[in-house]
Image (cartoon, rainbow, N blue to C red):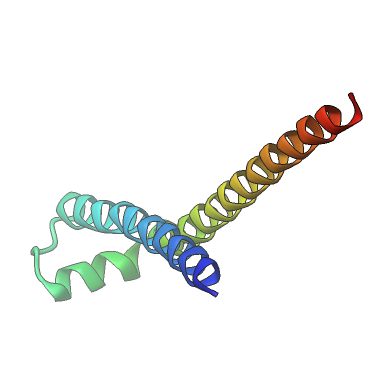
Length: 102
């Protein structure tokens, strides 16, 4: 039961890390576009920049997309570790079997 909770926690950590990393892109893009368009660096200026530039809407999806990518990477890593553990146990079992057959 503990392995499941650790497994889930690690995957959640990958998801959050991807989301936080992905937040850098829309924040930076909005700040750059707000400054480029000459809007004030206020919430109203950020909203005006978002309304005036549809490309920012696509960039705004980066946190979700990167969170899912990081989650998949974490899932792959968990499975690879599980397969490596299973392989190690099988190799040990084969060695024991070979010893008993001699």
